[in-house]
Image (cartoon, rainbow, N blue to C red; front, top):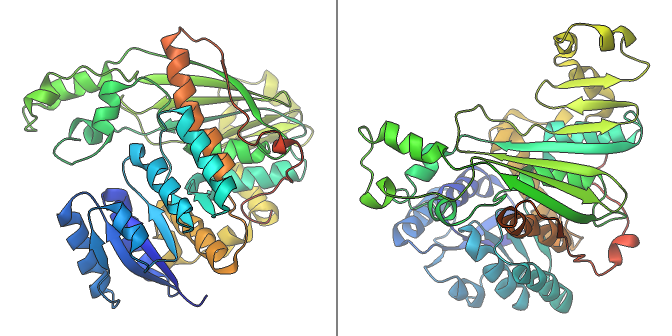
Amino acid sequence: MEKVRIAVIGLGARGSQILKDILLKMADVQITAVCDSYEDRVDDAAKAIVEAGQDEPFKTTDYREVIACGKVDAISIYTAWDMHAEIAIASMRAGIPVASEVGSEYSLNNCWQLVRTHEETGTPYMFMENCCFGKDELLATAMMRHGLFGEVVHCSGVYGHDLRKEVAEGIQQRHYRFRNYRARNCENYPTHELGPMAMLLNINRGNRMVSLTSVASKAAGLKAYIEETKDKVEYSDEVLNATFKQGDIVQTLVTCENGETMLLTLDTTLPRYYTRGFTVRGTKGFYQQETNSVFIDGVHPEECELDTYRNYEKFLNNATEYEKDYLPSIWKDISPEVKEMGHGGMDYFTHRAFIEAVKNGTPMPLDVYDAAAWMAVSVLSEQSIREGGSVQQIPDFTNGKWMFRPAKDVVEL
């Protein structure tokens, strides 16, 4: 296949960014269909495609017409979270390979339907978790694979992102997060932190997630933000009078079949800087993303354990010392152009992996079992929080295949 004909479904901020900054810059990609529930977004996307030198695409506000148009080799989904599974299932049933943007899920049934549809049809499905291709996450995973951290015991991560403006202005910006934060209280965006941890721990490939428990703080951040900014922003009465259910801080502890634990933190409605807080703890050392630091037993000074509470300063950014030996080649050889293609290059690497798998008929690096297990965390965390932190059993979406599925990484480490 010389060129892959792609349909882009969902043309809000994320979909339009991927279309313009990545897909239209790939020489082996042709955008042949665009779809969004808002016509102006469809027209804007079609205009950008023509301006990039491609033919005008098929345009529609109904994703089913995209599937039926006969002009696409693959479909990329960037809609609101509640439509991801529905569109992906319909695409797989039509035999069209599909890439699904990450997000929350609303029922375990949706997760199971994704898996069963893929198994019944054999249609390729990729979950587009870009952080699995992140520089820091891959560096730490490579170091772990080479034994530097010993036996891994615990991982943690954060989706720390101040989204108060995005959520508060969600109605006028036509953004789905507003209704989610008003109606649900859960770990609503788990996969940025969970995905890289799950890959490092070989989840669904020799290991699996067994159970979780979640707790949430009260919801105060959004209400306070709206009150503080209401003189500067023209909020509707619906926003001004809204009661939000989504806790400001949600923490979810996941236990694994092989004994490891993973701690996820959602932190999006209080003032903060951005972080993913990826951390790996093992019997010989650790990696910490926020300080970009590594500590390895027997390599770094033993007296540090007796030093002042600020001894972490000695290790700030020392992870760079390990890049020469352990950083994957995609990051060593990254071009300035790719660095501009979304999240420092992660978005490009994720989409490049999907395109290559479609062209070559090779397995997707992040598959339907990953998607189902990781998105199920949203559903189960909501139930756990509602029941005061009760333990929730995580289904085995592989139906036992996790025991013999070979371990693999998204790139060669």
